[in-house]
Length: 136
Image (cartoon, rainbow, N blue to C red; front, top):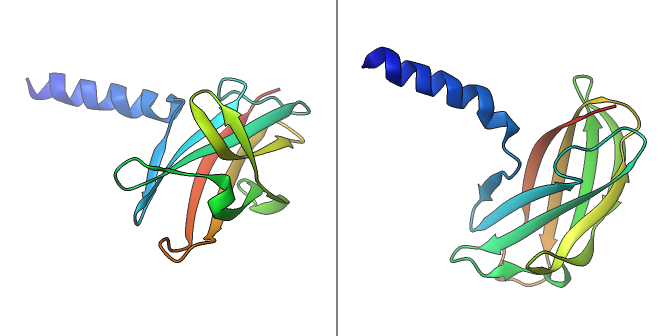
């Protein structure tokens, strides 16, 4: 039985990084990352990065309520490639969702960092990071 549990745990650890949707929390804010197309960006081709933000309880945080920037660093060196403000888009069931269109210069690992300053006093500043692998 212990071997079965160990095997299942190892299998989950192996596939977990490949799951397309990652929910993160910082204080009272949750972020659901999306990278189009299909969480499989290609070097030299435009990719749409958008982040569905919600308050505790599930109420959305609209782009108009926050001033967010997206920083992209190439790993493992950590070289900053780009910092860009986000704009609101309507995608899937989400409205006025923070997003940016980016083009990764080459295949490899990157770190996306979302930094947001709320425009209202009922939220505190927040930040999220998301690792992504870019293909050829």
